[in-house]
Length: 326
Image (cartoon, rainbow, N blue to C red; front, side, top):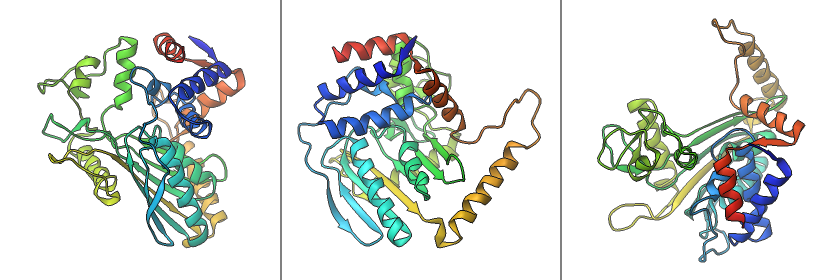
């Protein structure tokens, strides 16, 4: 169904306020959710239905627990992952602006960081190259197993150009967990080959997949990449585990680099833009109308929404969000 953009913002903000977030945190989360929702990404308002993302009763101020001129480790204070990672990106940008590189990790959060292209894009719009890695609960199985051990472990890379930045954002799982939640909400099946049920049998049933495990993309190669993200968002940022080795909090890592460490910044952006132009002009295979650059499809969807003021949302998803808003 078509929903007015202003209505979407108002209802989403109401849900966040009712979930216990103060105004500043609610607007941060709103920005992250809408970045995804308005680009056709499944990391949007679906996160607020069902159990939702209520603010933790144990939330406390975010603190820096370890710091150098190039790096910082943040205790997220059980705040929402989107709030903690936003703070981390801001600190990383400041350090890169002053010293050329900023590396910031977070721990002590346990809610989704949303579409991490949002954070990488912020750094790229400021003229920096950015790498963002995000951990989560144990939903994904290693290649050859059906036991959930990893997060969906997304990674994002953003690169500045003379125009819109290139923003590459992907989960290392074969499907994002909230893609499964979205399918369950809409009563749809999930694709074949992306998940197991609790007994290790392949399933296309969204409810069964949520009780089982998600597969990584690309077989053993995707599983290896997921393992690397698990290390970068776990051991490297000091997340904690219980007696059985299961993670009890989620971690994130941000790396921001000033291209001027190696080359004139304007030259870098110009040469990157020239490469994009060459890629876009490459000979196309039969049936291919356009060669898309990472982030371009989402930007087109956003531009259309901004022009019309209307957003296409699944009926069941919108009804669920309105119900949560009361």
